[in-house]
Image: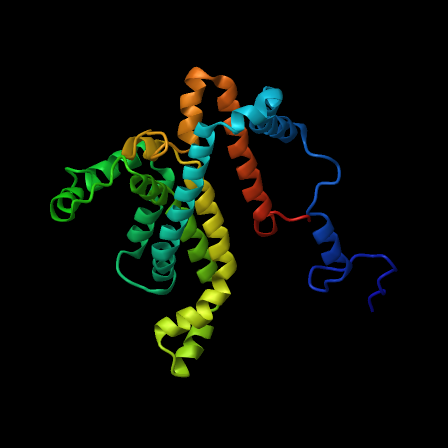
Length: 288
């Protein structure tokens, strides 16, 4: 005969109860972080936060209204918003089907295709701009035919800005939507097709509503990335005020002649970034 457990005693791993509760509660450190981890963690926090605080401290708050109401600033801001929105729309039109293809269709070389799609994430933006010139420039692989057949010239135009931003931003949308598609149950689509719906109808009426949060999150990320794009834009589209000069280019130009204006423009982009994070807090941030 085994003696019954006393009140408050923990049970074994197979009986559950208090033992499981103790394991769950023990996943958090209650005695404080060990010093070898705490010190580099604090250094990392300071390293990331200090430049942002310095930007706020050195901001010319007294002259901020004057700096932000100049015609050059509003031109750059308006162009940035228009191009980032257009680049996001382009990314959604061709990026969502691409994400569906990677998530739902088995085909040879799918891993290679996924690697190529995500390559702009790690590719230096200037290299991306050079690649766009080689492909879509006036003497590019495709651009020469666009110029000779249709008279279309893409570099150093507003359309070139949109294409450069879409090139660097679309992988964020594709990754987000593909992850959402992989998490969604494909049996809903299969049930719709067994009831007579075509694959496209099932995608439009069943899949899209299921993955709408993932599309929204990916679109916000793509829009924020497009808004902050610099390297590919200046390489492929140049820096012409009112036509291709976006906010990051205006910051770079102002830093050479008027550092206070550069700080003011940087604060605008910082505010946009904070707004993006606030919009995604329910997806990426938890309170537990």
